Length: 246
Length: 246
DNA sequence: CGAGGGTTTGAAGTGCATCAAATAGTGTGG
DNA sequence: CCACACTATTTGATGCACTTCAAACCCTCG
Image 1 (tube, rainbow over the protein chains, first blue to last red):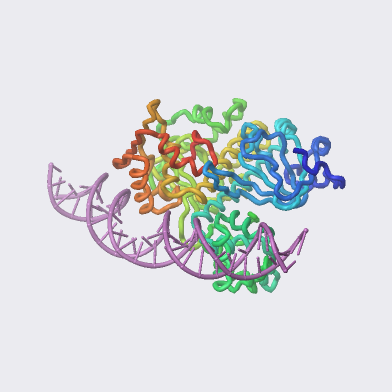
Image 2 (image 1 turned 30 degrees about the vertical axis):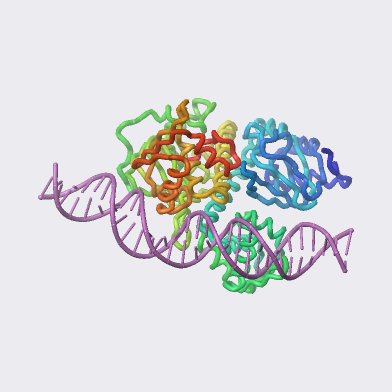
């Protein structure tokens, strides 16, 4: 049960919260309540934080690392719902779902999370309208991302989905060049994009020949992101600089 | 522009609102404000209510009929996001999205809608916490549906998606029998489930042979819904009596 | 150096899309 | 009530995309 447990380095939780959308514009007292209730924990790769269906007693804010959210079907297949980096929150909306998690969460890199009692959020949201509004905004953003994802799954080809993924990670230089590191395992990226790792590998090769991508290990280079954009974004209803999906 | 316009039969808007989740538990004054601002309109099949990217001045509540929500990609493909029957609301969350619709809406059956000014919602939500909470609940429900849909698209086969769709519409008799009418065109159902109409047709045939479905025109009969359930829900991470998705 | 996981490649199969054409179904005007 | 026009649905033939299974390769780490 008790994994590595509460961390030695008490990195300023207060500051983390201040940067989190959920707490924007809230009164200091309220934020302080959350800070007081926070538990900072360090978890190793592979650790399962909770399983779909578990009672939700906490929600989490990622301080560093990566967390995989997923669901499993009766026949054993796993669907990766999301991959979350630092700064992201998860498990918070179980308070709207009978206090049950609707997905499972697993640490996919050594990760430091801040854990808060769900109950505090549930209570606070009734009392502080601004908190509810912040949450609405967050949920709305998430809904848009999901919509786009649904569209991608039904319309884009595997290479296009990868291209889109890369564009969302990339920060094009003024010259139009892109260099980036894949943020996690290719197997995981494949799963996140709804394809097999073999398909991922072959689709990357197709991107090499179709848009001149250069892939070295987990480093990706593209001399001109507009080529990639034409290739991937033509099959999407969003404009190019679309929000980060991960 | 001006289509059939405001309906003659002033069906009690107030009552419609009272039944809508969004207005549960709100003070009568507020509801009255919405009633006062409501416009009841009747639209013919094919009428486009708004397009993705349009400025959102109104949101809508469906009194009767069916509305199709969709998005179009640069290269012209259309993705059907949702099909909404009476009682459902749409366009309301543009208030969180720079007041722009992130999808298009088209009437797919003669439909009566009640139209409200977005601005009123936007204003009210700041002033009435309960309204924000109602909206949070609604959005959360919608998010779950979207998650399930993403899962379906990446995991389920075409016949399984159809089976799942049918189960969500069906009301099994105690005997386990199911009889139902497809709620709209097969072409539309196919689009909603992310497949071609040809695939839909063939997948229905597969359901006939695999689980003994009987299809006559738009009527579907199944002697034992548990067979269908085993067939479809095995490839889903949700328990059977799952929420209606449409 | 060797073990083991991640990644790539190959060969073969499956599912869905596509294109083309037949069929069923619906509404219209005569 | 029938013939015609038009749409919705089905069927057939073919191709491509992705998966599956198997095996090789590569890289890291002990």
